[in-house]
Image (tube, rainbow, N blue to C red; front, side, top):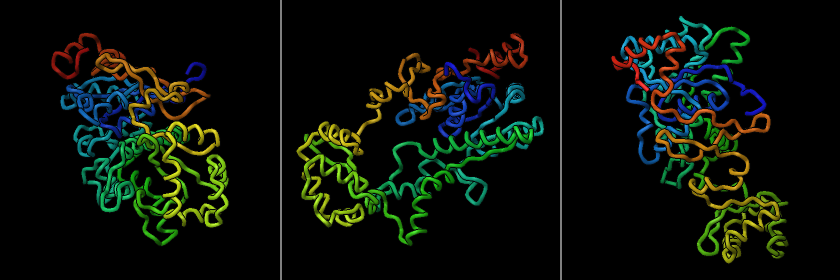
Length: 395
């Protein structure tokens, strides 16, 4: 940001993370100005080499970070990590509790060295009967009701992105922010825990409360009784699809006026939104038939002109050319670790009217190792000795 310092400028984060959840926490803090140092194994974060749906993980969730590669199983590697941690405000990790404890890098061990340290753990489950289980985003979607609500009846379906991993990391970052605020008052850090399962439960809480209020089990979204009368995907001219909605009585009036549907506007059976919800069985075939001759472009133009909700059915790759994202700076130029150029979506917020941007490209493995080690007191000779003994990765 050009005129304003970022809010977490001056905060140092050491992260021992991989995959999506833990890296998301660090990405949020890094985008907001923190110096985030990613400690990777000598072979590198596994997400650097994932294929298919995982191939975008590393550049997306590790921008604005520095990388150092250390072998934490060697005393010299662990000592280097501890020297970096001694300079940190926050440690973030998403390994099994036993992993960090065996390394002596768990919260109980590190708090003895620095009572101001904030320690963020990203887990599958918060402490309780399930905390020994191995969790994945898809695991908690299945056991937490989200896959049931997303799929059709009898066909549970995971959501189309890593919703729990990403949101779990976001809640880890929110917890870190809260702990930083608390430290201003108490002078002491604390442990923060965020978990996939509890995050998923939070996501489906609206459906839990729907049952609490109505006494009726919620139907999966594809077969639910919608709260809105017109809230659907329509297949139109040339087989294109578009989402169209009219969710209030005012919007229904505007919809009927836009298309000259005076008969529907005058039908007493369709007077209110609730009336139209009850009439969907016979009303929707009429609307689908009347919308079919229009092109998606024509419908978009009419709905936009009359202030009605609409959306083209967009594929992720199409968003690189989205005019709104391009005009508002929502996509930042990025250089991938292999040198190729692309763009990446930024945090969906503004501070002082600006989007927090890209300060550091996704790091090459160990890219900042020598500089970081020098900063915590290692001489060039000592660093070279660590490289030669394969404790750290040379640049």
